[in-house]
Amino acid sequence: FTSRSKDGLKGVFSRNRKLNLKNLIVLIMSSASSVQRDLDRFYKSMDKSDFSIRKVTKGAFTQARAKLNPEAFKRLNQVAIDTFYEQNLVYTWHGMRTLSVDGTTLMLPNHQSIKDEFGVHKFGPKADKERSIARASVLYDVLNLVAIDSQIDSYRTSEKELLSKHLEYLKPDDLLLMDRGYPSKALFFQL
Picture 1 (cartoon, rainbow, N blue to C red):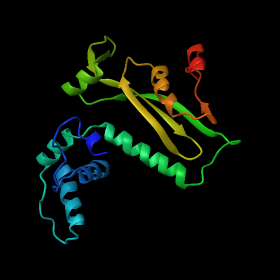
Picture 2: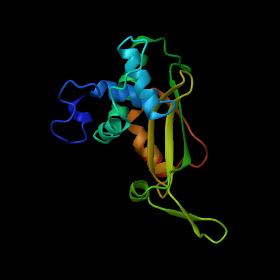
Picture 3: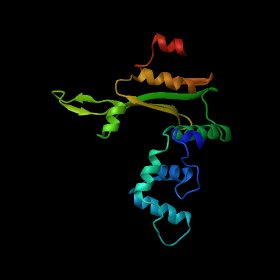
Picture 4: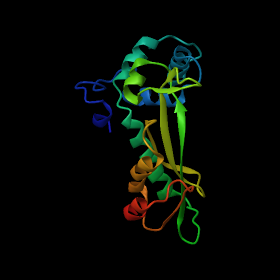
C-alpha cells in the first residue's frame, strides 16, 4: 500500500517521521477545523498529553499531502468495502445485492490546477462567467448503505461514461437501479 501511495516519488514516506503515511491519511480523513488546530490536537492525542506542543507545521503537512497519491483513498475505501461484506450480515433483495447509480455536478474551487484538470465551463445569461465544474457519480448499495464506487471527471463527461467505470464493481447477482437517462443499447451490451 505504501509504495503505491507515494505518487511515483522515490524515498517518500520511507523513514519513520512524525508525519508518516498512516498519520497523514488519518489527519486528512478526520480534518474538521483549521489544519494547524487539527495537527496540534492529533499529536496531543497521539502523545496522550495534557498539553499541545507543536510537532508538525501546517506547511509540513501541505508538503506531505502533495506527495500522497489520491488513489490511496480509493484503495483504502475498497479495503473497507471488502471488509464490510466479509464480516457483516449483508442485506439482499431476493438474493440480489441492490445497487443504485446516480450522478451529480460539483462546483469546484477557482484554482489553476483545478482548471487544468477539469476544464472550464461558461455559464450565466450571456455565458460570460467561467467556473470549473466536475461530474461525479456514485454506485451505492441501497440496502446496506455502502458506497461501492465513486467517479469524478470533467463536466463534459456523461453520466453514462462514468457508469461504464462502475461496471467493474458489479457481481453476477446484482440488481442495478438507475434513472431513465442511463439505459441504452450500449449499456445492455456492456452488461
